[in-house]
Image (cartoon, rainbow over all chains, first blue to last red; front, side, top):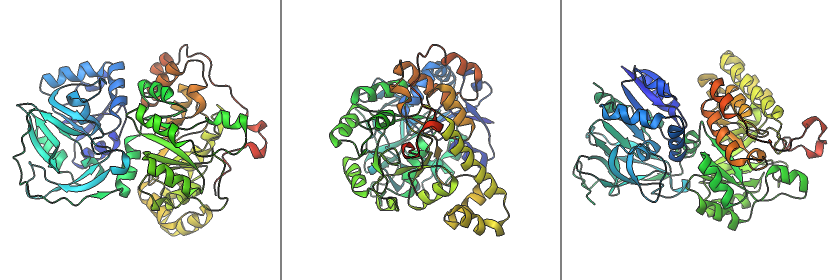
Length: 188
Length: 308
């Protein structure tokens, strides 16, 4: 199994390190050709406007959409969540638009409001996970096929729609591998 | 509008911790592989965001103008910073003078996302830097060598950038500083453990941070580059030398075609290992910013030497 990490901008190195710890082969994805032979893709945290523009300039948006529609699992963290959403409130920035959700960017405020908290994650019900939220978005609307996996103060912060997983927080900045291990169960 | 929350008990109590070291360094991690651009008004900020900047640095005068006009360079007008914060959705940084913690408190009250304690402004304290641990807002500081970088991290900086020589359009000092930092990181990483205290003494650096580099082989916080980047090739060079992102000061808006140059530098940081892409994006960018030979600057004109 080879898991690609979109490496246009953001904390892709943290995702690569976490996947390596789980014994998974990885690849940095910067061009359309890098997607060949990749079984799943992670879209890291970063600036969603920057990553979206670079995806569009280098044709990665169409290529990733096509692979996702053929079942390739994708996991997006923070900016990755925003890029997966069909609707970004108040913004027409480039996106993949694969998930039937709406998101609000910087929903908790500016950097000074960034925080950590233990939050539930439905696939691992025994123990909460450490949620690291950095200028984080929230999900403001979910469509019928979307499952809510985590909420924080009644705000939706983790969702899944079939082969697509997204979190507003950053498990890659912690030592807890459970969210990534859950994502790998989606890879056939 | 349907939302359903049924997968876990509603009675969860969350203990929230704000402004942790992890959230501060975390924002720096999120900026990696990106370009942070100096802007002097809302219109420039929007051009930068549209080009793909990961953040903007709000300031009244870019370093090239500070150099030309002289006088004391201070924190920018809070109203101007706020206008830029309202104009874009990406993070907004602003500069305070070295050691001027009152300016830093004002910037924190404004809610800027990162504070740059910057040698580009006139220093307010020639002995002490700001105690950055006392702030909720993360700080970035400049460094010329590893000792300086580790002293700033010891004071609480969540990001380091090379100083270079701001406002010159000349990459030579940024290269010198990045090579010096990376060389000493490699030296510490490969040194036997019993030599670490002597290295800490020589670098005038906190011992525990030297030990951390010995173990990890990298700086404890993201290591960016600034000071003299004027072209996509300059940005690519700094990425090859170990920068994890770049700051472009006067290089964008002092050039003849800011939109095109800004976009090209953004692309160059992502594709720095791809000469064919760099060749394509470097075509027809127009005139770069007016530049200076650092060797012809008088000692009192050098900004990089500010900082202790």
